[in-house]
Amino acid sequence: MSKPAKKLVIITEKVLLKKVAKVIEAEGATGYTVLETGGKGSRNVRSSGQPSVSDTQSNIKFEILTDTRDMALKISDTVSSKYFEDYSGIAYICDAEVLYAHQFCGPDGC
Amino acid sequence: MDFLSEFLTLFLSKLQSPTLGFLIGGMVIAALNSRLTIPDSIYKFIVFMLLIKVGLSGGIAIREANLAEMLLPALFAVIIGISVVFIARYTLAQLPGVKTLDAIATGGLFGAVSGSTLAAGITLLEGQGIEYEAWSAALYPFMDIPALVTAIVLASVYAGKQKREKYRKNAEAISKGEFSGMQPAAAGGYASEAAVPSGGYPTSDQRSAEGSFSGGTGGGAGAAGMPEDERVKIWPIIKDSLQGSALSALLLGLALGIFTKPDSVYESFFNPGFRGLLSILMLVMGMEAWARLGELRKVGQWYALYAVIAPLLHGCIGFGLGYIAHIVTGFSPGGVVLLSVIAASSSDISGPPTLRAGIPKANPSAYIGSSTAVGTPIALAVCIPFFIGLAQATMGGG
Image (cartoon, rainbow over all chains, first blue to last red; front, side, top):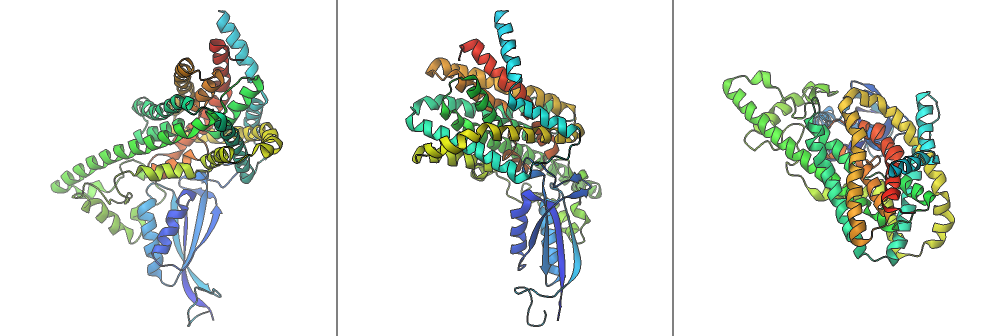
């Protein structure tokens, strides 16, 4: 049995990695996945391309599964109000169905 | 006239060194849209190898050196690091269209030191057979950290002043009932470019409005976009730069050089590979410089002008102070060159992330663009040969 959940995706600058991770944990999410990423947005192309002299130019993508939409919104609010005025970043929420996750699934799902 | 012609000959001969050849080669192939890439991890590994070699040789030298000799050059390094930031604050920042915070960040980056430029300088000195105190490499942190700390402190003092100004205006506007026209626009002025205005979120609308305007009583602390405390803590900046990859490697090398006996591994592994690795690094730097040129074009010609002049000016300050140390304590001509070279260099690995975190409102395209695209190539291609030539012409070293 699958468990319904929300997937919050935050794409931002790599320099924020630790700070965003702290926010996610502080809001009580059980975990997150981080990927190196690149692409094009309103701050122009931010490539993960080579060679890059420092991590300042690279981007990361957080994927966070949360039980409730509220928690996802809270994380996204905190991150965006703290950082997105000065750093590039985007956040969005998707519906998800968790099929298996040892930590995440409760007694009534997965 | 003799001095000039001798100097020009020296200068031209330095331009033919492999180090600079690879740098220009990198720029050329990047300009030709070559698909050649050097993986990031290899680039980082090379920087680590070079800095640990520089650190090891420094550490080995410190074991036998008279540390009192180091005091004056170290003091000069601190002075250069700090004054470079102030120079940018009172020259670049005053130019039309240049934002003060961007200028301070640029100054911080130019005041900080580039490990690869230092390594290139050492290679050229060794190639010329010029003697230098191996502990000169240990001057690196004495310039790097003060510059970054000064830039971040100066920037936050400035931002704080701006913010108080903004709140004063907001308070006046609120009392006049002009509230709606004064939505939070951020002191730094980058809000207009922000990918996602904080107001665009369903629930954060309220938050940012609350944050901005309730803060009026508390002197602006805890406002939207800058919830961290108002006062700058210096220790975290120092810690951050010490933890940066470049300084960690250099200091590790120094410590190993001082406390262990790494001579065998130094002779057989780190020293022989040094030049080859450096040439690959220069290739990467050339490609990177070309890639960043486009970004610099967006931020404007004043940065390009600053980035051309600054390395030479800072290097000359370094040379002048080094020359004083040469007269007072017998600091070798090679050491004077190295002091000028680290003064001329601008940080490219650990500086940018520190500044990005420390001065978030500054535009990274401005400072990284001017440093990587113009500053570093000038420091490598012009300043190093220039100062070696100058040292040979004035002090006759080697």
